[in-house]
Length: 48
Image (tube, rainbow, N blue to C red; front, side):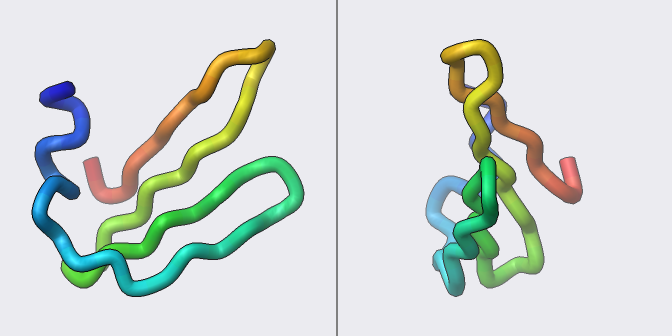
């Protein structure tokens, strides 16, 4: 779970629902993209 240490404890400002993904926007201007690919949850964070 170290992959998510950058967003742990950050204030979640907004959640955007797109066609095939959720975008979580945090107070420190980080974005976490969550989508399903081949039946598995896949995440990508910006900045990493």
